[in-house]
Amino acid sequence: MTATEQDEYADIRDAVAKLCAQFPGEYWRKLDRQMVYPSEFVDALTKAGYLSVLIPEEYGGAGLKLSAAAAILEEIQRAGCNGGGCHAQMYTMGTLLRHGNAEQKQRYLPRIARGELRLQAFAVTEPNAGSETTRIQTMAVRKGDRYVVNGQKVFISRVQQSDLMLLLARTTPYDELTDKTRGLSVFIVELGSAEGHLDVRPIDLMINHHSNELFFDDLEIPAENLIGEEGMGFRYIIDGWNAERILIAAEAIGDGRWFVDRAVSYASGREVFGRPIGANQGVQFPIAQAYGNLEAADLVRYQAASKFDRNERCGAEANLAKLLASQASWEAANACLNAHGGYGFAAEYDVERKYRETRLLSIAPVNNNLVLAYLGQHVLGLPRSY
Ligand SMILES: Cc1cc2nc3c(=O)[nH]c(=O)nc-3n(C[C@H](O)[C@H](O)[C@H](O)COP(=O)(O)OP(=O)(O)OC[C@H]3O[C@@H](n4cnc5c(N)ncnc54)[C@H](O)[C@@H]3O)c2cc1C
Image (spheres, rainbow, N blue to C red):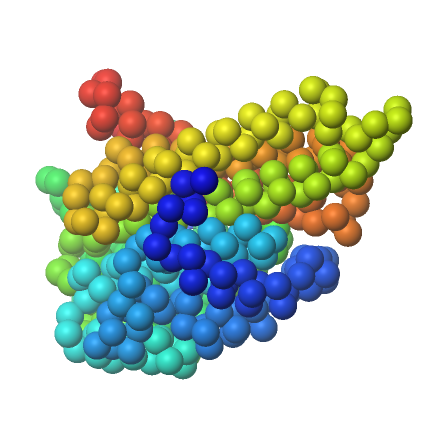
């Protein structure tokens, strides 16, 4: 029995797998060639209620635990689909749930749950700050009952496919802070009213992911759209990191299992030198190793998710799960590509597409170097590099 089979979400997993079966490789290949957003797939997930599982029942969601969201994302990836078009709704939901006020939740959550509003964009990264989030420069200045935003972001995904975007902006100049983790704030931006003040420029990427450069020019946000307390935004972002890392780990494990399934199937059927290539240890062992790595990463993912769902501290497990799962999926991707030989490069096998897609999980939304720094500095107590 694999770690995955031990969870309580067998029914959800089956239902997600059935939905995903309606979106085969051919669907994704066509979109990938033209870099088109998977609207039909996201609509189907929304209609089935999977993207609102984390929204409490009182606001029209399913009120399920993070483990359920993780199981859904894992199954999407395992089926060969790509949750990258919609996973942010799960990644970012916690910021609104934990730190939004009652009025904000009432205003947005029921409509998100009904699929009328999409909260798919979260704008943090900036060209001059990169991983050092406390150095962001986009400024939100309070003027009466509004904030006026000026600045620039980069790699902000799904802006054109969202109605709402969470924005992290500076509300106190860096030089005026004694505590450098203060001075940032989170806002809900209603993108429909941003026209003329927000220039969105798509970035040509290696995968079909819809990321953009953003240029804010006197964008006005009503003060009531500030989430939580002014100046506490970095703390709110950190609060979401464990959930995000657990969800990424689940997606990586789903990808990894897809690679292993495909590698096993291909290596069992393809005959060269008069026997299936999978009989050769040079082909078989990397696949077996990838399987082992995935199972180990999955156990850590389960431990992290269970602790998270019990409201226990889980920073060490969440970071470790993200690290191990993204490494395991990448290793599985390589084993799968190698097993396919030249055919691994042929788009019709979907291996090259998934190979490109899974590579992202080591880099974004957080780079594995920063995960290692967390483990080194916060878990092992090594000297800090930043
Ligand atoms: C497809 C895609 C989608 C994205 N979507 C979003 C989004 O929707 N919203 C958003 O806000 N951001 C998004 N990002 C941005 C992503 O989160 C950043 O790329 C990531 O956080 C790293 O920032 P950077 O690219 O500026 O790298 P840098 O911070 O410049 O880092 C470059 C390299 O140096 C390493 N490095 C830096 N400092 C250290 C250190 N102290 N120790 C060790 N190594 C270090 C990094 O680990 C990395 O390998 C997306 C990125 C991609 C590629």
